[in-house]
Image 1 (tube, rainbow, N blue to C red):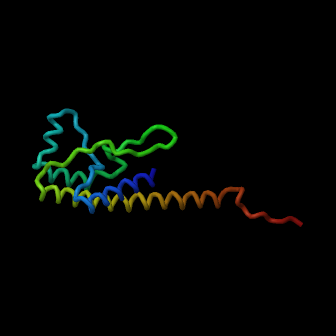
Image 2 (image 1 turned 60 degrees about the vertical axis):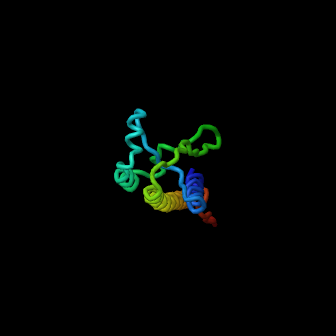
Image 3 (image 1 turned 180 degrees about the vertical axis):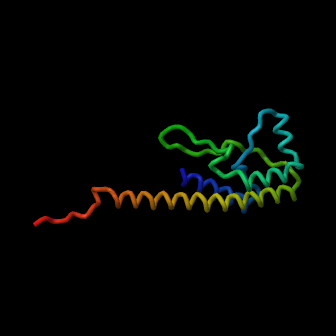
Length: 135
């Protein structure tokens, strides 16, 4: 799953470099269309930015889905376009860019720790213990 998340983050950053647009990997939850429209207001930008920085990462995303099946693929399920004025979009996407870098770092670190733990567990298993010859 970590590999898939890293791939999604890297593709989002590449899309931003190439087009100036970035998909919403994090998402918001809402209970109604009225609430969703209220959350999409430009006046909510400071709240969006703070909630992104303080409370969201890819593991808490509303827009990524872990699929069933043997592959257990992670899929982006929301492709809403950001319809704010260009300068506001640039600020918003700049924050998303920073979040992608943060999440790439965190996922890579978690992945590395998991690999290190697996290596330690393997080394500590009785099958890997050195054989001491008896006389």
